[in-house]
Length: 314
Ligand code: SF4
Image (cartoon, rainbow, N blue to C red; front, side, top):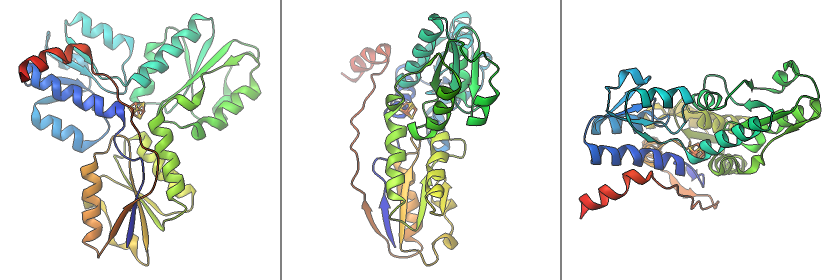
């Protein structure tokens, strides 16, 4: 079998930064440090950090007063920030800067007197964080059908922002429906919401034209990994989401010559290797990487994690 790896795939700059923040916090403060919610949606990443001494909690009342608390890459509501202050927690914020940018845009629109519409998936932690960062009402829209149900005057001043793990293509139909229905609505240039979501989806769309089967390495609760699998299916290619090689099934590859392999933004490259090993166990494989976009994006770490560590290393 030929195995073609998507380019780009796997970790984005926001995930690299979030994991680095937990790692450095552990080095600086020692175990335990407390992480609110899974730092990124990947069991292997979470287990690895847990083994190093990170403790994962769902709510801040599980964190002892004064302890180090890290907010996950998905961002948190204002109420969570306030609760951390009240409990005197030493907070490190691993919210991806691109998520923070959406919060800032949303607040700006609201300060202009507009009602905010958030395009995203109900219940996703990023969506809950964004809603909780905006003063006033936020209307969540998940589909074009939801746009028709919005109970607002057609000339009401409105604005929209979107969840970062939705690509331009995902949101296009909903935004078009909003623009068609309402006369006074504005929104950001959606092309720059998240480079990683956009690039991974574009790569999978291209890869799907060349392969018989698509494998996506990622977690079932990872929004962007699920979306990559859906794009493969929409292209007519049987597509499977797997956490690692143990979930690969031999029957998927009967008569298959070419397999496409990608990974969601929170899936480590070791798991891609692990899946390749599982494919090798089925027979000889020839692995290559598609030509694709090189990503050079890096996000700065919080300043308070930089200096003391350098001093310690010296
Ligand atoms: S997928 Fe995009 S928004 Fe989400 S953490 Fe990665 S870079 Fe940030």
